[in-house]
Image (tube, rainbow, N blue to C red):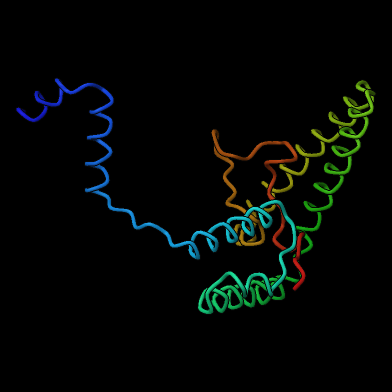
Length: 185
């Protein structure tokens, strides 16, 4: 308590410095070497490229990842390929959902194209059509999973039909099938 009272007498700039010192003592951070800083910057740049969906060459990954990290990446990639091979032949029920979603995506993209050209009334027509197809896809999805909940493993995210869930009848929130975007090695 006395320490707190003493700190009240310290000007705010000194208080800020004092807090930084205490945080530094309580949570010591090691300084990165120049090589570690360079490696960190390169890995962050690679991560940004991957998040944007761009390709990263294996030799670049080998250069900036440790041998152990690269081996882990290769192992996880092989697991992903095996998983995708296992799920290659999707059930026909899922094909019905995927086709409806494909139609909705096509109409949504057409709406975006018309909107960018200033043809807003035509764009609205395609947005409405896409939304209707999304609603149909959502109904199909709900029906499929009601009768066979094991098919949930085919989707890229958890599916929750409860109120307040992330699922709605729009092109962004509808789940995609795992095999719909197979990556190439």
